[in-house]
Image 1 (cartoon, rainbow, N blue to C red):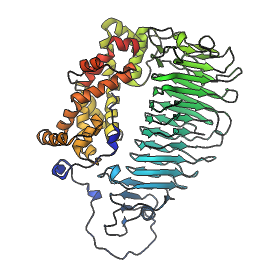
Image 2 (image 1 turned 180 degrees about the vertical axis):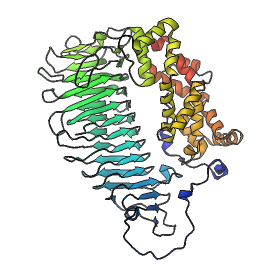
Image 3 (image 1 turned 90 degrees about the horizontal axis):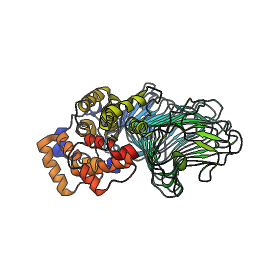
Image 4 (image 1 turned 60 degrees about the vertical axis):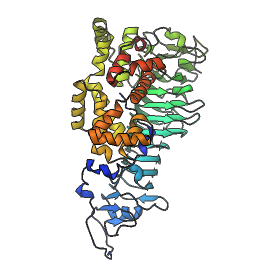
Length: 607
């Protein structure tokens, strides 16, 4: 289960002092020792230092500074700056010109409580920005190996160069503007940036853009874009070996929106582009396209493998805007083909497409008549003929041929949907492989048995536990946590038990910028608590403790209603009726409810 986190998560405040007894003591490393003010003697600082950026009301000395630029200079190569609440704003942008510098927010303070800073990172390597409130971060063409993690970030710009750019990492950040990765313009240079586990929210024309970005990976991010005619992810040319996997993309703005836009122009070194697009859930809205492949040049160097994506809730699932000539559709494999990236296993979910009013699963156009795009082994609604929901030269006025032969029969489609929805990957379709094994179990034991075996598999339980930790703590799950939470789930505990453990942890409390009850209401229900609810919440807290209160809200009827609506949206590609919602929320148990939906006729036919 993907835990639902409201935007209010990012504006939380600390627990009132009455409940500070629930918090651990402040780590020794962050305690401020009593000291006398003194006249500082300036000296060369060759050794790395730990510098505290403090409020102007605090005393000033060699390790406690008022201005961020001053603190950076004092820290030196390999040093650390710890930003505490109440610090002064920086006039202009702070410059980082030294290697291996770490700037981190006070781990006992919420990100929102910290001053916002802009940074230029110039000719530096190994810089880490962690748990910070960041505005614009700009890397020069000579900066590389920069990490930004666990922070709020407006814009991130990687200035392009001929070579030496890249190996930058953005992970577990909330990004409200845009990320522009310009990479290396020389042919064959590896950029290898990693963009993973981030939440993008806003209305930027392009939320994440790549150019000249060989071997860059974009994995397990969540994009919500309210901009008009915007794009979630755009990849331009001289970008080969790109991985786009496991992302959730929701385009909620007006106009012609694009979840993922691939085009082999705009970069250097010719019309080169190759990418694997796998396991993404893309909703481009009633006028949008989930995945656009826009070819330039001759198409020879446009290579894409598309596998296991859910592109429902879009007007067009996949559009191939081709060219005249023998390679006018490049080497695009939507299933069952072969190119330099291997062979796509298919498993793309086109359940909701009906071929009416321009609502097509796949649209191929502007190519010669004989051009074929392989699209075998995919999932279509059981009630439609796949050839009638694609737009090509044989149907609807497109061009060429979209080969949708060998589409999955209802039983194989059902099992494949379980794999893509619950595990974010396709089941091995080889004879006797995972897909056939799942169908054999389906025939022998029924839908509930096969759905339960996948939902409660170790792979699925690990993903669920990791989602909870990532959503509420904004970091990767640790091995002891994975073992603990996986054991709880395997023993039959509900996902809300894992949520209560995480939401009742000191780690969660240390990142609050509003009182604990309000934080739970925002994170679990997506709204503010009323005054009455806050009072009742703290009374409950006295009686049951942090985990008890978290469990109460996580299992509330209101929460169950919200989650059921999410299940219908994600699993059945439609809204739940009031009667359906009421029937599924009578009893607690989110995993049992999910299993009930996965075992239903509705999911079998349309999921």
